[in-house]
Amino acid sequence: MPLILRGATPADARELADVYLQSRHALASYAPLVHTDAAVRRWIANVLIPSGAVTVAVCDGEIAGMAAHSVSNGVAWLDQLYVSPRYKRQGIGTALLESVKSQTALELQLYTFQMNHDAAAFYERHGFVAIAYSDGSRNEEGCPDVLYCLKR
Image 1 (cartoon, rainbow, N blue to C red):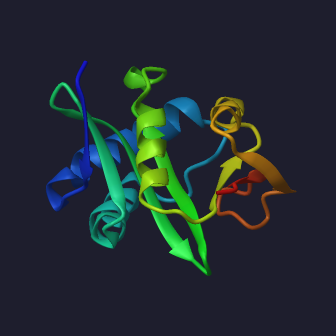
Image 2 (cartoon, helix red, strand yellow):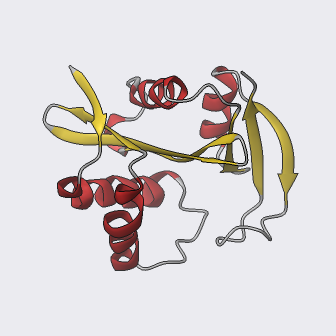
Image 3 (spheres, rainbow, N blue to C red):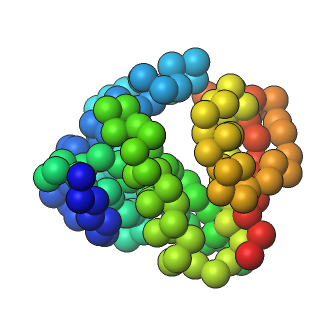
């Protein structure tokens, strides 16, 4: 399975939204989506992709995953990392994470839901350390989360 990593383009919006929504529904069903599918699709097309910091993983001609990052106050943030459920545990998440890490030398932080044990294990395997826990009152879903940090 050859994997290609590249920057997202406007033509990727539909497939990226499909990956995001499928992943959220299948792997994080405990966290309610507070936006409609249509709103998520508009956000991906009109905000996320134009940010210019979205990497897509293409496998067998289809988008299998995506990662988005940003920089704020001297810290790089992994804002999104989603892999299509059918491509889970095939190294795509690792490839996307490594791509983001190669794009910045800054400390890298991210939030994930405390209930997302698979994500926690994944990030900890890659050297991230939990540095703060919250009750979820600061995120849209209202789910307890954890802040992870990768020191560089």
